Length: 203
Image (cartoon, rainbow, N blue to C red; front, top):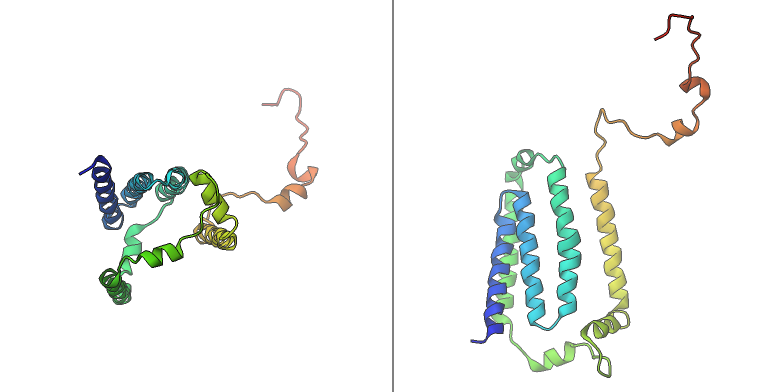
């Protein structure tokens, strides 16, 4: 057994275990930390496959931005998880039905999946000519052959970000907010009061 194969099994085992802990952990902060661990091990698998650009992007973008953002959001939002768990029983039948469907799909895929050299060679994108690096070849393929799909993915992520902001934006009572109209339309009589204080009776 070579050293690369040992690291492959190590990264794969830790990635699968941390992914299971993401959905099994009761504490949402622990779930995000296990998600970061899964991303790091997936980056190790990308390095073993020779895709160093994807590994660095996974670390910089997902671990350095998305997962840490999830962690801060979970820690800063005052979410009542006990209240969220109260209505879980009414959605249990639908959840079990969806889980059974997903399980059947995974069983069918795992049972009928066969490696075909013709399918692999037919679905692979043509590599640019010449001796180019992995990053340059990936950029040329994404921004030429898959440019519309790349832009569509960006639009979907933008819509998802706007939806997350709209869903989490709550107006709490008792919190003072800035009113631009009142600030612009403020008069001197409304903000400044001149008091004629008698001599010797001031503060």
